[in-house]
Length: 336
Image 1: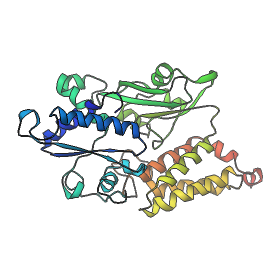
Image 2 (image 1 turned 30 degrees about the vertical axis):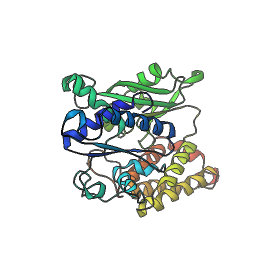
Image 3 (image 1 turned 90 degrees about the horizontal axis):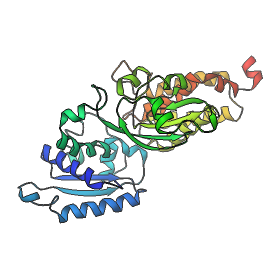
Image 4 (image 1 turned 90 degrees about the vertical axis):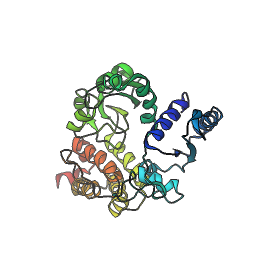
């Protein structure tokens, strides 16, 4: 949106034309003011060039694009929560079905795609589907923007083929771990994905199937790297606080469960935990997001995937670094 906003606009126009749509929206977080102004300018230029508006390029096709600024709610990244917000209502995800493609914005058929997807469309049209399919693995081809942050020497956004190894992303593109520290754990797909241990992270490619086999997901492709100095209990608490804050509160398991996780993890960090708390954390995550079974198509217990987004990372922290959680227990309670 900063460097090539017309790329996304062209993708939107092509997609809208393909489905016979005459009104499109760009939903953008309110905090992204610079990007909002860039998009305003780009949309205005598109209207001036008759790439948007009435009778586009002399055809009988009309399309209007409206930029809508959200209020910064994480939950509005879920497509039906976004549609609710777009309609001027609280960003509460809808029960599906009906799916947005059948009944979305103002009860009209609606498709929701992200910036990255739409930006690929002009290049597919220009170079052909075969070119796109030649990039990366057969089952999940194409380029992907990997945002690498955390304990790396060269954090940033890297455009690479799907299927690149996570090891190459961390140690080649992002320059490895600072100060000679060892890799400890990685979020491969943002904080809503289950974490990988260093052994798992060094032996996986960034495609849908391989990450599913590791019981995690590609998600947003936001790679968060943790080295040996990271306290996994504190990191888990930090993640839990974020999701408790961002829960929309519509579903009881998510609304109550996220708050309970924060309370229990805070008590553990403050030295007041008990061995039963570890089992209770597992029980709460199961109640929020369901058991993590990637062999099945559906595993959630809430209206939208936010519940799983809380349960998967917290549960994976405790499962894979249980010793660190036990180390926070008062010694007399561990012995007892």
